[in-house]
Length: 293
Ligand SMILES: CC(=O)CC(=O)SCCNC(=O)CCNC(=O)[C@H](O)C(C)(C)COP(=O)(O)OP(=O)(O)OC[C@H]1O[C@@H](n2cnc3c(N)ncnc32)[C@H](O)[C@@H]1OP(=O)(O)O
Ligand SMILES: NC(=O)C1=CN([C@@H]2O[C@H](COP(=O)(O)OP(=O)(O)OC[C@H]3O[C@@H](n4cnc5c(N)ncnc54)[C@H](OP(=O)(O)O)[C@@H]3O)[C@@H](O)[C@H]2O)C=CC1
Image (cartoon, rainbow, N blue to C red; front, side, top):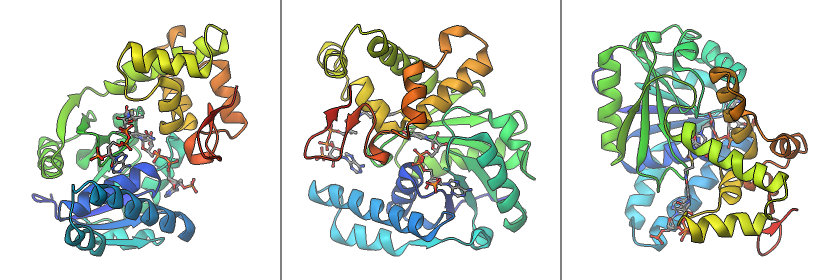
């Protein structure tokens, strides 16, 4: 069993995987960032460089901090390279089949005592753990988007997660200067059990013609002091991820109130996945974001 975590692997170089690698490297950990294709890994490294540039511009970090952190991140498309890691965090697409396939591929390479975690927004930790060779050393370490800015990390134990695993995860997350909440292993945990139905309701508000994209987001920014409107936030999270979370809630809690809005389904079917696809409820391809309906 790994008593102290010193080396980190991150699977998935998307917005969350890149963010996790970013904060772990800045905190002094040695990091390997893995994705299936070279262009994905390169894009992830580009995200990290840009994100650290924002922190540098606002004097949150120094040039030396950035250079040191970047020197601690290695990128790879070879899953075997994760074999020397103390902790591997999976941050791939919110699709249970994708995650289970990743665990089947990565587990044979891991040290016997290595920990494996998932950044899943919603999927059962207990069920995902059963797809690994180490349910006792598996848990949910759920970062929030954007990772360098958001203070919260949700910790979620599966039914088989050992106390030592939970304690090691707490020490690791504490070293990243994050605040922990502990959620029981039920669909979408705490944050997304509350947040995503709100976002889904905003999409219904648009779908039923109660408001426009602009009026809905303005209403919640100025009326509820949200930093982003719910539709802007949905685009920021990714509409595919939002839909996956609503489907997990709908299937897991068997309550029609979690039915994903048909308009959300339509956007995902169109490939309009939000900021990461250039278009969602807003079109991001011009100077300013423009509502798409
Ligand atoms: C889906 C899930 O499973 C769980 C989830 O994550 S749910 C989503 C949770 N996240 C949210 O709700 C985000 C809500 N939005 C916000 O908090 C803010 O809009 C935001 C922090 C993202 C951006 O803040 P903003 O004031 O609108 O923009 P901006 O001024 O550019 O950024 C504010 C600060 O954050 C920093 N920042 C923003 N994005 C950043 C990034 N990706 N990397 C590093 N720094 C970043 C900026 O550098 C800026 O720093 P200073 O104030 O020191 O200059
Ligand atoms: N977006 C958000 O606001 C938040 C998301 N999360 C969770 O984090 C996870 C990642 O989300 P996010 O970063 O937004 O997703 P993205 O779609 O931005 O990134 C997912 C990354 O995983 C890659 N990937 C897909 N299949 C594999 C595989 N078999 N092996 C390795 N990498 C793979 C994708 O590559 P490709 O593009 O080629 O498929 C992509 O680079 C999800 O579980 C999500 O629910 C948690 C908190 C917040």
